[in-house]
Length: 152
Image 1: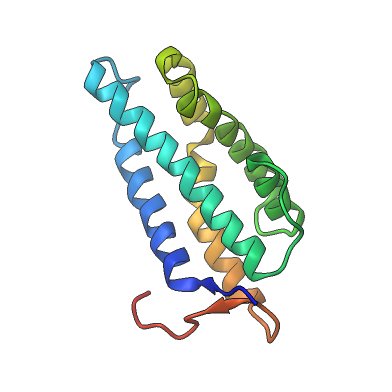
Image 2: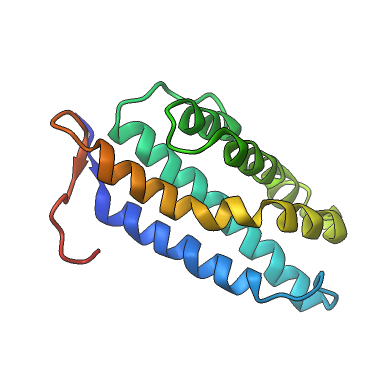
């Protein structure tokens, strides 16, 4: 049986919190090349961490297998880990992953900025939602290890 590393999950949640704190410090759409690259990377890594944590939750609670990145969010919403409105917001954010990873030379920074402004609340609440679900749903049947780690 495959066990999910709960310590790693909590590290990823802290990583998301750090990213959102940095991204929320931006006042306007980044204008310099360096700022734009940093903004792209921050959003991309936020997406990657959200999906990674989502996959860990799906594996740990033995939920159905996702078929796509967006499906990870659908599963979390369907299992009531996330409220449906926040799930829809995060799906919009996750959908821009392809642009950041495959079409990186054609990123529309204004569009990405507007999308970030629209979704930053859901992204910021994601770690809290995951922790709340873990606190209230870890019963006798799950696939998490490191339940009593002192590093959290």
